[in-house]
Image 1 (cartoon, rainbow, N blue to C red):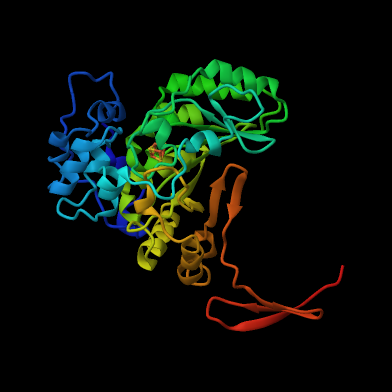
Image 2: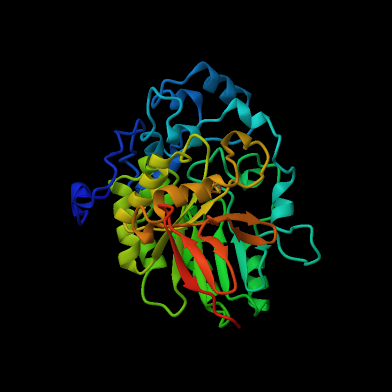
Length: 391
Ligand code: SF4
């Protein structure tokens, strides 16, 4: 287990949310020292009612939902330890524990991933490759996760497991090698950092062998739900000064998810040369109130994570209970971020669609436009003018 004294700064110096992981209920297997702590966490995933009851007082409704679900659910013991024992509305608990509302579907599209990732289109691609842009693709290398988020837009693949993909990584690498128009690869899943260091290194090496690949990105929730994954081995594999850099985007949806261990994992990634951004998902009852939204983005910055996107919840089936009106994210940026806190804390609010990401930013800035000038409005409602320059 890592020595936490090596952590290079103290929590109170950084003003991060004062949440420390509680003692986890699982027992660390000290006899098998070959296994790293993160692997031990995965071996002990909290995915039974009996295990869950060690962390929270499960309500009757939660118990019924767990008994009636056929979908995968579970969390790392570490992330489970951040849940509030008594409060069923705790923002972490709602992302982890199945709900009876997952059986309802008013707004979600059946076979959503086939539609969203253009899997039934004209282009013949391996199952591992999803494409919405000419020069960028998502490369799905695994369907396992540290936690099985109840709001996941890829739930048909990783949570419900109704979409059966063929994960042949070499086949995907061959396709990328042959498609010289691809500049950027997002390695995704599931959670690609659950692969062993050797496998991750293999994928990175093979991608870097292609002169047309200019950037490799990883999408991973592990810095948040399993920060123990950022080991010296992983830093060696991801880090260093390379012509083809690694960028990592994680997903953190509430400031309560951020602990000292998250901060240290992010520091370790950054000091290895890996840029870290956040892609939050806007969700009713989790982060759609002004306080939670602002605190999330300020706390991310405090631990050096750049808020990158806030996603509108995609129309995947069975997640309607997390939906907000479309305008909600733009309003929250207008009312809590833009002009209210550091501009660095401002994410872009987007909806990810089958034709790419579409920004849904606040549109209040241009109040009026005429031949001579623009009338612009700020977050306080004050106006100013700017000359309208003819072509
Ligand atoms: S970690 Fe990502 S892929 Fe896995 S369940 Fe959560 S949102 Fe979905």
